[in-house]
Amino acid sequence: SYELTQPPSVSVSPGQTARITCSGDALPKTYAYWYQQKSGQAPVLVIYEDNKRPSGIPERFSGSSSGTMATLTISGAQVEDEADYYCYSTDSSDNYRVFGGGTKLTVL
Amino acid sequence: QVQLQQWGAGLLKPSETLSLTCAVYVGSFSGYSWSWIRQPPGKGLEWIGEVNHSGSADYNPSLKSRVTISVDTSKNQFSLKLNSVTAADTAVYYCARGPQDMGVAFDIWGQGTMVTVSS
Image 1 (spheres, one colour):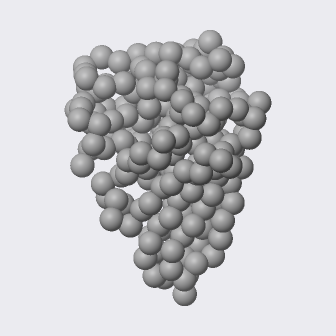
Image 2 (tube, chains in turn blue, cyan; image 1 turned 30 degrees about the vertical axis):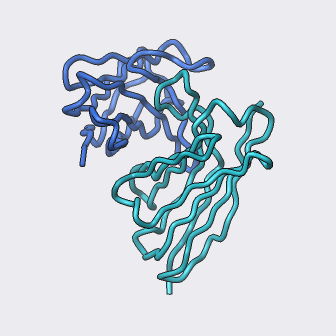
Image 3 (cartoon, rainbow over the protein chains, first blue to last red; image 1 turned 120 degrees about the horizontal axis):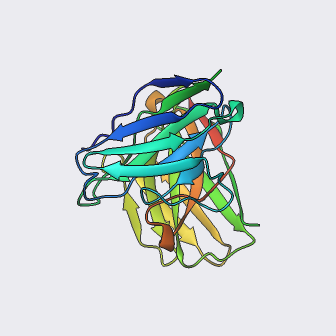
């Protein structure tokens, strides 16, 4: 099997930069994807292929990856960014497609 | 605007078969992969498997022995069947679209269906 590890929670004040990490052994060879999920709603894709932003996603969302860690950065976090964030990726053979355990972002 | 509308039985008994269908409205069916993802109450997301427009499927190894994902291109629909369900299969089930030019991303999601397994 394959696992992605995220911190359970991150907390920032409005306007600060929030960084959520995701670690996995295959990340040097595979892409990371990030999803935002607000309470009671379906997830929304915010970053794909490490650092690409889908249309309609605010510029304050960015992604990066280095070695075995991928990072989602929210520059100038807003109250409406409070949500659970999940990273997603595959193992190097594409045998396993897994989500990280999720990180609850609090902005207050 | 592309929409995914999903439906299926919401309450099952142990050992029964879970069956869900997802319809694609307003948009092409070919050129994408179509996935099922689930989320137990209060827990994280789990990829179940995917199918492409030609019917070729790929599954999560942990569920492979119990899962079948199929496609009906004439109706722009794809379906999930999960055999021999137990309480551990209780979850919100989502269908989702995977564009070929976005790696393994899911860019459009269905509204989710809560499935409860209880005797």
